Image (tube, rainbow, N blue to C red; front, side, top):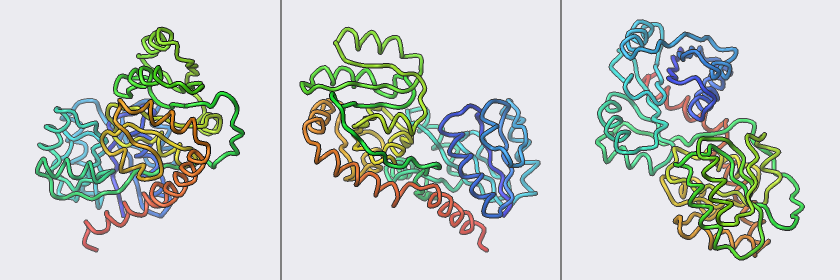
Length: 323
């Protein structure tokens, strides 16, 4: 197949990483893959692939896609719902969206013209409620899966978060919940973001034993903690959660978007106001920590590998081409 991948951003974010993993995997299977993306550090993620420069103007972007379309069998657009149009070739769209009201409106308007890849059944149902019918569920996958490490649990046990320090990640909610926890623990936070100073102030005010580590190498960080927590207010998919699952960690996640579906029975998913209760339960029960960590690793291998995501997407492409 000749595939045109359209990626509207060029940072080192989740959308770019997912699109790069898919594009490089398809190229490794022998498909011709060209990536359209703007200038920026994210272009290095697509090293070895044919790259075209995506202009900044919306109209110029559409014109360029229309001009290039005849040379390809299929066009896959990531995140940029406004670029979905009839290009006389099959169009696949992956929203990578948080689904606030604007997201829902925009996706509902534009995505009806494409076949839509959803990461979870939760997302698929939301889009079908908006009137979309051409949908398929293909969970995101991760490359360079993190192997489980021997956990020599020290004292106190370490609860860890990895990701952006932004309001949508719910860390302020986590800190206020941790103030209720009686068992000893230490909170390790890996990541940076504009909420960092505010979060540090809340932690100090509440007496939370929190350490802000900045950006960390994922494998080293995940091997240093005993419990992973994702307290998000909203999530597109939760790649950090899947990385923690691949590392064999017991995980606690807020019951938002599709996180309960992603984690299944391989962890604990609760409303925000029950995070303290869930974390305290894990702090008290080593057997539960170990059993959930094992289940998390097994669920990762069954559902969220790079190989499965690439293979399922390839099959979906072929189904659209009627070969």
